[in-house]
Structures are given as structure tokens and as C-alpha cells.
Length: 320
Image (cartoon, helix red, strand yellow):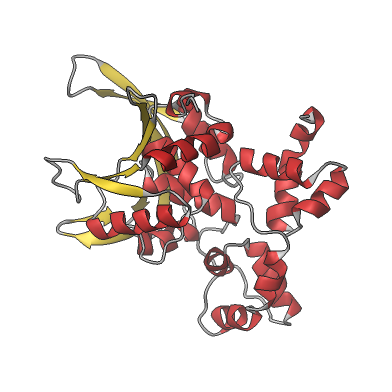
């Protein structure tokens, strides 16, 4: 049974789960539904779920490190939150409970605050066609360009209010190098945020006369980032046998980054291998493919979670 009235409470459910650290069961009790129903709503809205009851204990066990990072190392609430996979509000509460006096907000661009799911969305887009631009001041903005308007509009909706102006997404028309026609792309571009500068320091490196995207060695892929990565740079074809073949266009990443992504996919249960593409000059030329069983499992897992109808073709019906 789908409780349609619960659809109107999705933002509150996400707030209780992500910002207030409440368990799925406690939220379910509040709305008089099952915890499975709450879990489904979270997954439908790109929110990665955690093991029941783990977050409070896990953060409490690391209070000393959280305090040290904030008071001695000078790390921001968002930086610490990103490291621990929680929200800045949750870190703030741990510090206040430890009688730590909070610093005044920096005079630089105000920090809107990102939930763990929102950080995963940004990173998932970076794995695809999303990018960070660093300005002369050192501040950074986040941009997503895609030929699917629904995709960029969905990303905008899921990120903090006020991050992207009301007039976006906007369209740009470009000439097609392979045909005589033009094509349209849709763009969202954010305001400056401290988080983006922090991400730029780990997701970009100097290479020859430019900066290129890399995947940090210690990066941990989650399902939210994986779905956004697949939307942007993934594909699925059905072979003559009817078996699906899922692939990711990682050709532009250096080889070490591709290996990191392979390892992370393996850790999520998706066996994979690489395929070399000839003629790639900016990157390793290595694409990632999931093995047969993993491709089938991937489509089965993420097909029901696809909320961008323009990408229905990426989740074909697979016969058992």
C-alpha cells in the first residue's frame, strides 16, 4: 500500500532522519506507518539510509576527535560533518553537548549547510559531468550541464534552498560537431560555498597546464552518489540474450581514480572490470563495466528508485 498523504510529508521525513538523526522506526511511529514505508520514501528521494540505531552511538564514540578537529585544527562544522557522514547540525549539537564555544560564522560567503545526502548528490554529479570552478579569489562554485532538463532540475530541488537562483536551470544552444544541427543543454550554477572549495582541494589536481578531476583515494561511494553518477555517465544495453550490460564512462579519469571507483563498486556488491577505449588523450581511456550478475542486480536495485523519467531508458525491463 502506498500512503499518498505521506508524499506531502517527505521534506519533514528527510529533516527528521538526516538533520535530527531520528531512526526510521521513530519516524514511522510518529506517522503511524511501518519503518519499511519510511525507508522507501527516503530512498525515493536520494537519501542514503544507515543501519538502524548506529548513528548516535557512532558519533558519541568520536566526540573527542570531533572536538579536536573543531577547536585545535580549526575545521568547519561542514568539513567535520562530511568526514563523519552526518549533518553540520548534528556536529554542532555534539560540540554544544561537550561545552565547546562555537566560533562566529566566517565573514566569507555564508555556509548554507549540506546534509550527507546533499554532499553525496554533489559528489555523484562530479563523478559524471558536474564540475567545480575555482575563481581568482579561491572560492568555488558547482555547475551541472546536461541535455536533460529534468535531471538538472531534480538536482536543484534536492540541494539547499538558495544555493541556485530561481531563474535556473537555463538553456544554452551549441553547434553539433558531428552534424549540421544544433543541440540544447541545460545548466545550473551555484553560488559560492565553503564546501565546494573543500571538495575542490581533494577532487582536482594540477595536471600539465590545467586542473583535472580525480577521485580521492579514501573516497567511499554510497548509493545516492552511485545513482547520480549513473544518471550522468552510466548506460545499459540489452544484449541479444536479453542480459543487461551496465557501464560507466570513466575514460577521462586517471587510472588510479578508475581503480578507486572499481574498488568502491566491489564494496557495494557490484563485480566489475575495465575496458580500454582507444584514442583517449585526456585520461586513462578505461571504462568500467559491471559483470552480468551485477548488471542485473544493479538494474533491479536502482530501477525502482529512478525519479527522472527522461532516464527510463537507462533502466530497461530485464527478463528473469
